[in-house]
Amino acid sequence: MNFVSTRHAAPVATLSQALAAGLAPDGGLYVPQALPAPRQLAARADLAASTADLLAPFFADDALAGSLAAICAEAYAFPAPLRPLKTPGDHVLELFHGPTAAFKDFGARFLAACLRHLPRADARPLTILVATSGDTGAAVAAAFHRQPGVRVVVLYPDGRVSPRQAHQLGCFGDNITALRVAGAFDDCQAMVKQALNDAALQAQVPLSSANSISLGRWLPQMGYYADAALRHHAATGRPLNLVVPTGNLGNALAAILARQLGIPLGRIVLATNANHVLPDFFDGGEYRPAPSVATLANAMDVGAPSNFERLRWLYGNDDVALRQAFVARSVDDAGIRETIARRWREHGEVFCPHTATAVHVLEQLRARGETGDWAVAATAHPAKFESVVEPLTGQSVPVPESLAALLERPASAEPLAAAYAALRERLLAGLPA
Image (cartoon, rainbow, N blue to C red; front, side, top):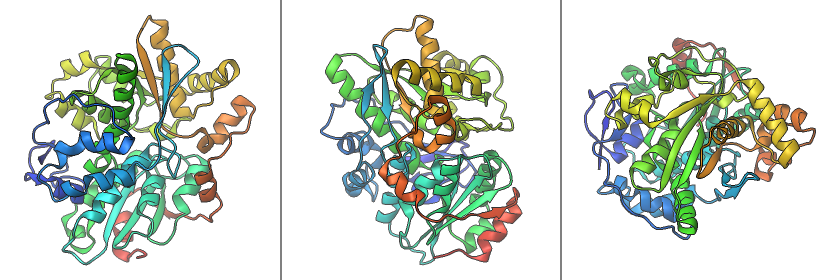
């Protein structure tokens, strides 16, 4: 399978080429030149096998095709269980059992495994740039930590991630550099994109990306939705509907693409925080990126979701069809707090702020008479947000062993101005090997 840019001004690329580049040279995002035909897949023995089945057409005829099973086995070495909630028909898909306690661990490990299997003609180290609103950076750092021939530079908005997220971002050292940017996530994302499109910089410092703009992050995120939906359908004969908390739209778009490929998923509803660019669009307004605002659900503090380009591509740039297909709902901080506190008080359920955003939206859907089986994507462990969750529940949140180990390490991050010139100068000055 070959891949093209959403902006139609870049050469056709193989999967390996698209993975290595991260972003298309015209600034667009890589998408399949043609989607595979929908298939009826069966539930497999484990998450890795289900993902390999689903991704096989994308890897066909590529140099990585023979390594797909091994890549999936490495990336999906921990579970993504679908657990029932107290409300009948409602479930939570727990995506936080990886090494950094967030769903980003799956895609980051998949991309790292892909790049390890790709031969490189350039003997110089490859520098992976990643902008993070909280969880992506740590997952990428963990996936690439001490990987030979690769350096990682993580940009995050200073003061706009949780204390434990910030510690994770700066605790790796070695080939990982954390930069705390004096700005918002959107500034970090814009700087990364500009660097990836700077040919003169790339000639001196080979670069790639590990954000969900990368195919290697986006495509594997279909795996856990496919596995959960196939198992649920095999057990009940019913499709699984989803509420996905979303910021940059990559995780939600993975679920949408999985449904296009024949996975028995029903409705897919988007849940955002007070950054309501997507709800405004789906309610009939123009798509207008806006400066992001800081919220309790900081990983969704995105005012210009990059993957909107891919969503439009998937629907033939038909905004009418898009608005008919999806609902997006915004939840403010007061709603997030109320949901966390009430679900603990009434049901003993503990959610991170992002998962609580989706739970709040699901409750709204049920109140309006929505039926069927639904799952909320639980994107992070609540222990990553103890400063928000614990005052609302009155209980300490047990810290997963893998997260506890990271929190015991010393951490540091370099300050950086929210200006591309500052990032360019830092990259040219050299990085730890």
